[in-house]
Image 1 (cartoon, rainbow, N blue to C red):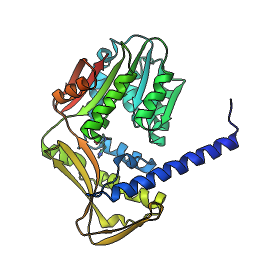
Image 2: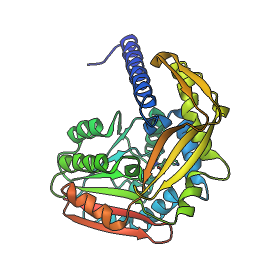
Image 3: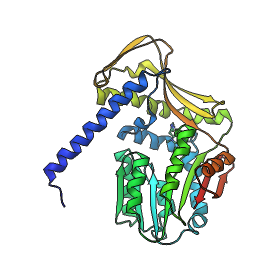
Length: 328
Ligand code: AVI
């Protein structure tokens, strides 16, 4: 059934209003926590996604380059065990650059591609790139990973195998128990002969970690503060962006880099759509992101706990990055 254009407009507006209401209620819930927090998934509006693309090109942020090099070097080995035709699902792929390395020339390697992301602009960029590479039909799901996985599993090709890509160390932005649950979710949509390809940033010297998340060009600081700008624009917030400093710290006990926004002075901030009025003390922090770092063994162990008993791992020893294929 085709939906008339006017009805589609109303449906899109309703979806946007619902997304905004969820954003407002999560901003309220997280800012009222102790310590104050904001969910990192809200970094990725159009400007946030563009700033993240810039971060990926910074000389101090090695994840993207290390992973792309591993994909290019081991593409044949990664794809070899998979039965053709291959159905591909990518979780949170950003601009689709890495999917392009794996699935691109000398000819489309996958017969069917689906992308899952909460960022509309990331989905569009990735879809355009794939179309240019000859992928006629690319299905996008703008939703959470769990919901997207269930929807996408229904659309896979009936024969051949399914490869789920979870790259860029996106797994690191989840707390370890949530990350393991997510791997379990992926495992449950896979059948015999399917696989998950997981990119994970590894533990490395603190100095290298900190400069990756607090770069001398202040791109990461802009990425972090953009969340406040987004709250101002979309939820009627009154954050003074100059009133908050970017801070990155290494939490060795929990093996994670944390990003915070630190109030430079006492100040009151209101967020109309979240019905909030908060008094910040000087030095008070909003915790905006955790980026967990693993050892190669921990990555394998997480996979085992999620129900994967076969794995192959490719490592970049210099950048300390792991690509792991978990097979069913
Ligand atoms: C998307 N994610 C894996 C990035 C990371 O490294 O945790 C997000 C990021 N935050 C600051 N720089 C990059």
